[in-house]
Image: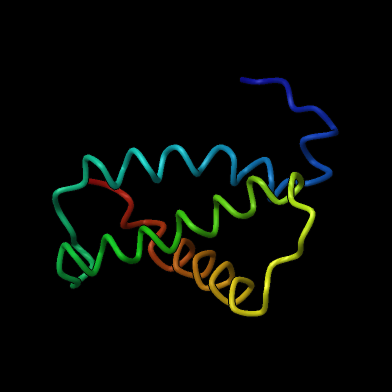
Length: 91
C-alpha cells in the first residue's frame, strides 16, 4: 500500500480527484454498456459531468480565479452524480 503523506490529507478532495479523473476519462473511452437505465449517449453525458467536476477540483490549487456560480453548480452536480452512480462505474 502507498504511504499516505499528511500533505495528501490536507486537501483530500484534490488528492482523490487527481486519482479519479484519469480513471473516469479511460472508463468513458472503453465503456460500451450502460446499466443505469440511460441510453449510451445520456450515460456519457453523465460521465462528462463527473469528469468536469474532477478536472476542476484536481486543478483548483493552480487556479487564480474562483469558479463562477454556474461552474460551482456544475462541479457540485458532477460530484453528486459520481456518488449516485459510483456502483455503476463498471463495463
